[in-house]
Image (cartoon, rainbow, N blue to C red; front, side, top):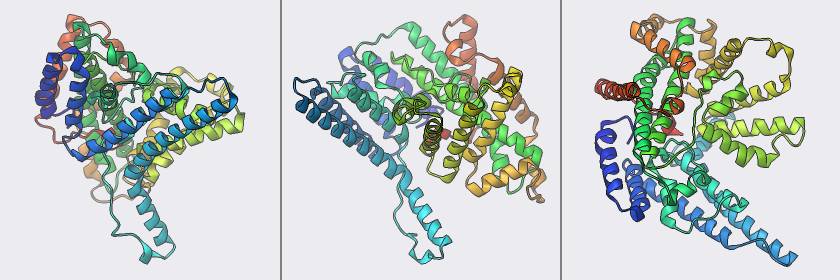
Length: 480
């Protein structure tokens, strides 16, 4: 079930809100948890069992960690308790990352193994008939979310929950369950037991949702069709390749930020305040700044639970660069089980390392802000080729097409006829104006005026109308 569907907009959402608000305050957590499991299990109920198992493991781990206080009068007792706490944390990490690794990377491992055997001339030993694993929706998001709770309890940054229902509600909350943002427990711990439901929150949440739906349906989907025309073609001209590349950059931004807007809006309707997940990332003037603005919940998660524990920037120049490379490569693999994503992460890490090395360079400081912004967007867009291309070979071919090195075929001109339509060009221009000159949803919805309400309702109406004629309606981050 996706947010941009009639089933969700006119079926699940109004019914869920009605049930939630009619439920007594003491039972709202249970109601929200049950509604979230219905939402998640709509496509495949078996996936609910995996999420429930993750929830049970981390809930028990949190309770055990909370009951074992390292403070004691004797040194030996403190050491024993610390060992037990580390063991509990290790069990939680192994269970979470083990399930994530199995479901997300098993198929990739088998395919890589078979490819290696083929390259070595040992194709007879390939596991062609070995079983394949279906990827549960949102497993990357709720696994990181649940795991962060255990780590924070271990570190003493948050207190363990006593109520299993509250914790199950936190893990399964349907607004951000399948595509984020990754909500830290400490950010909503107080809200789970003591949140307010106000008209102002609900109104802002509705506006948030309408803007996010508009981003997705009115901009991301048309940009995606332009990008698909370029990327799916067997051959493409240089001009078409550049347009397709930029179209995908707009698509993935409006797709994911639109989903995040809808998730934040739904959270507000339910009384929760989630943190901002996008901060006008294409206005960044460096790759470092880009990652401070893009998918903030993931980048801060990787910083706090991977980069800093590895040593961050405290262990010297070489170790800092190694840590950056590790974090970005693992961040790339987190997005998808394919070599393309690993290379994409490696490119991001390489650019971050290069920027740190050139920091303070006069050559960078003398460039105007708009030039640095444009170069950053260009670098991000080029890297996204590996994100979008079906495989590594296709990514390399597409990069070649950008510079006129692609193979020209008879049907190459047909791609241009699909891309260079007045509607397509208009969508790309509108996308560029919104990306670089319009306020972000977080700021725009802080104060709602009558004109803003009309705009939000108009975006909702246009989106619903557009859905009647759109067959193309994927959410990119659902596969992650």
